[in-house]
Length: 255
Image (tube, rainbow, N blue to C red):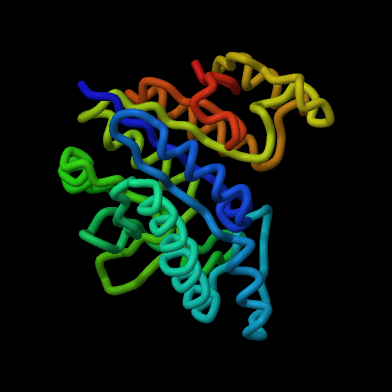
């Protein structure tokens, strides 16, 4: 099978001109098939504020009411996505901006209300790997925004890490997939205050021990749970690294 590299980048990286420029240059140099999943939360929060819409977060997750859904649809599917696509076209990459709504790429279900009502937030149920694989095989580079749909006419805000993981798992049946999660640190750290304390390889049993000890905590826990599940379901390689280290081999490799 041919290699496919899936890059997931957070909003902070794609929302600042200098870091976006560097990311797109590095991404354009990746050889072979590739796909990019992006966030855009800070831009959504900023626009919501300008429109007088309050942004509410619980444990780092956005509560998405109807007004907020309109904002994230504009920002993720429009402004951020098309800025990335335009930047890649300038570098000779034939990128296509998509949400999970387009071509029925990603179907989700509205998250059930338990302790918290997250509103119009989707949990991924199905990724249309056939359509994505067809586009990729034609030399098209998909740029996925974190929006999905329920096939009942509703757009749903969906976690970008989840979209990257679910897309990687679905495409692992068709490609040798490398999934790279990019964020602000050099990798998973033994000491959050020491950027050089990168754990080069992380196994599931070590992960559980580090969570129990409080070394790994907060938003890194679900990110790593996604990573281990991806490896279990056929993704060849998962790496947690800094966006500026794409292609260098540096970071934390999930085993």
